[in-house]
Image (cartoon, rainbow, N blue to C red; front, side):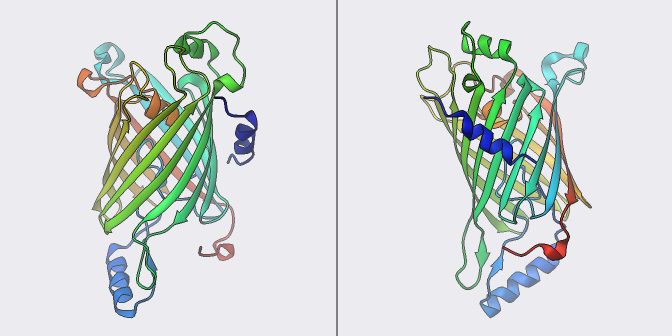
Length: 309
């Protein structure tokens, strides 16, 4: 069942992500203690350092008025050997931008060299973890994206068709509910129930929908750095032939205005369709990619005009 092209066009109108915050852990602990004593509401801050865990999104949204420039890089497979310098001779890159319309609502998009994909997304922070009077135990963020693959020849090969492809055939969509909890100042955990819808599939595969459950966590090592892990499990009966679940592990460092992440993953692609539904790499075969993400924030509206949501 195909989705109408106007969904993609609506997402395109919003294209222009992520934020990073400087967190003082000692003061955070003091505030949380005061909240318990006074009964006032204290919202959880910096559940994750930025809006990306490794490949996928976190519950964090970009602050209102802030433009987040994202550059993501994936080298080739380590098992390519010395000839390709263990993957360093090969690379895929995604350049994107996220913009906070409000503190709760983020829009963004990007372009990947992998399969020549364009992606556009909308992200809304529905609930925010808080302690005290009328507290909330979890943070919940809703996410949806549209992806357009413009490498038509590759798409025809992947889907085993010689038919002329329309714009509808090149589109796929992702829908996620991001559910997270910050258990301690140094540890956060997130679940990501996910649905990937592909308009065009191999005729030997009956379903256009792929269902998956993602899980991720961050363990803070220092005030401005931490270890992240991410895993997506595609439900039996919906997994595409020749694809495997994605597992990634990385280390991230926060500086003034920047977040720098380095990681290892068995996925090449950097859109939900690629790393959830269509990942052909396996860790046990050495299909491991070294990569990094860079996030840089630019404040387009003055802080005094921003209001706390």
